[in-house]
Length: 360
Image 1 (cartoon, rainbow, N blue to C red):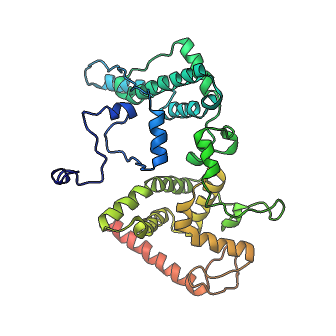
Image 2 (image 1 turned 180 degrees about the vertical axis):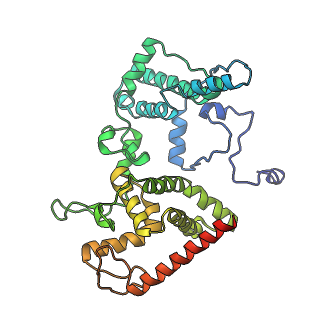
Image 3 (image 1 turned 90 degrees about the vertical axis):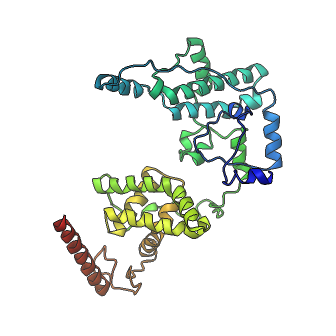
């Protein structure tokens, strides 16, 4: 890059030439998405090998007819836009099924060519589905095409969906010789380094992580906590990235500031940290069976550890001052002094909110 161009290319963006067909070959748009760039010789060599004789997909998608903007037309357009049963995610998952199939390792040249056709058809459908809300047009599959597509997409989603989409083992296909399945054999699982022989330990019981094992999560308050957690957890990475840029620090240095704000947001719904923790433990370990619980442990891990010590070791310590206490009540978590202090704080908070409402 010359000195002159350095004046223009000042960000960490990926730049492509408008005179290059790369956007057609890789089928990407330029609307600000993030992209992972790998400069590994082996991966580059494999990519170059696999794009030989690959030509861009090129097709035209229909557009909606011009019409007057009025209430009736807006209503009809919305009904049409949401009328399709198949979603973008469904079609994308079907594309993954074809790429994951054994046809690439065991199929004939004719079968592999047919599978590639199916992928092209599904990519075309997916782009039509993406544009459907504005075009109100979706191609109809000829019967013979539909049968061919079903042949490759009727099975379960790929094995790696256990990691990518938190699927259960019985919801995914068996591990095969596909690239993604083979990665599972060579990438170490850093979160699973301890292995026990059969019958050495009892079955894992997530209820030991909870303060009240019978906690219900189908109440409006619990559902509000779960909904807020999901939204905050999805945006966590971008919040950390934004905070790091604003402060000029590494993402690791600002991570726990974001985690603390997530905890504070959850406690706005219910300031009982044990209630919030129980709801999320039951949701993530039982209902969702999520493989990724980092945010839960980062934000509320100290509460979970307190619960574990009480439930397994029989230790009862004041949650605030950590002094050992005589547990008078079954759900007692604080000593008398700390409990009184908390009551006064809550009373002051209620008064403050009452005064604010009166001013309004």
